[in-house]
Length: 177
Image 1 (cartoon, one colour):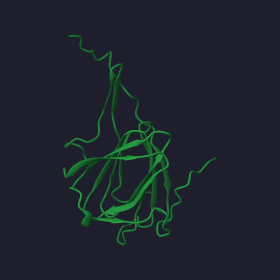
Image 2 (cartoon, helix red, strand yellow):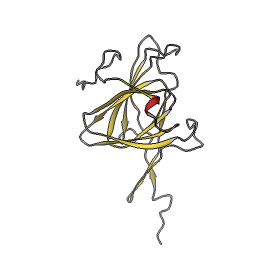
Image 3 (cartoon, one colour):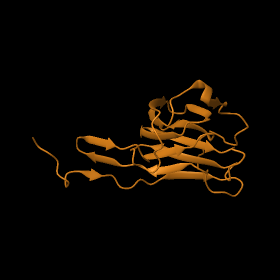
Image 4 (spheres, one colour):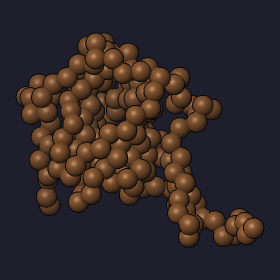
């Protein structure tokens, strides 16, 4: 049996984080939101894409893992979880992920963060409870979004809002130029 040696394997370069901050009220982030570059190990047979380990600094606990597909141009949002921490990774396709903090006691309340996440920018995005989020499929292929959540899904634990509400100051339209 032939085994690939270390010289035959290659790990992709550290990703360039496509990260657009839309900052309001002078702060620069959303409290509790974490963006972690992920490893993609490729060779002539394919690739291994890491997502989350139990010894990671962002790992809290395991509730469930599920996958969501999103078609190019389709929007899934807005939603927020009351108890669940989300851990999103996008191994296939690309999405624009937007998070908005309206927690009244948060020092980053009013801040909005936009990230471009997927196979061209492979990241783990950890979103704390009570932060609104939504995503839009980018490019020409269906994106696959994986979520390793800290609690199992319950309809009583999630709040939803129309993606075109004026409550969250965000325009989902493509910005050219």
